[in-house]
Image 1: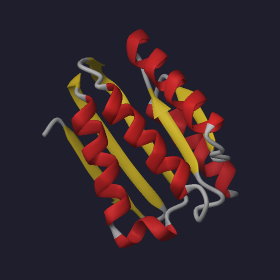
Image 2: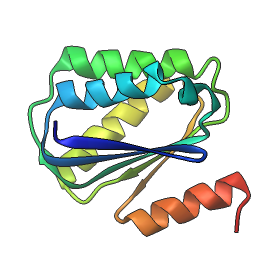
Image 3: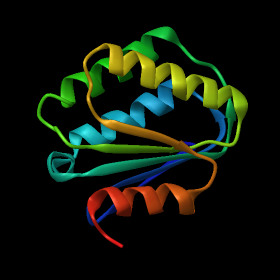
Image 4: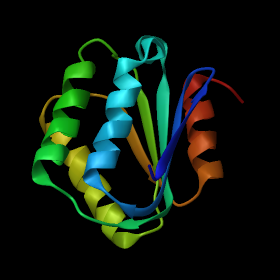
Length: 129
């Protein structure tokens, strides 16, 4: 497994390392939704800063998008921060955001180049200074 999940008081931090495999990205998403804390989570930070583009399988991509679109029906105010330094992963993240938004997901998404800026945005949006 080239990713690690860490639950924080109000959300989840996921760190991906090495070649980004879409099946592992989907697995991390399934791990989030299968945890009872997901129902109360307010954000997710997905850190790709130590990852590089790998194999992206369309079926995994479609499933991940469908999971988030479905979850947005009951998780109305949710923040997703992507930390991305690789241009190919940046392009994939933008494609993902466009796809879930087109599917009706109304979450707030932002892309950052470092974790500090992602955390600052999350705290600002949650009303913490």
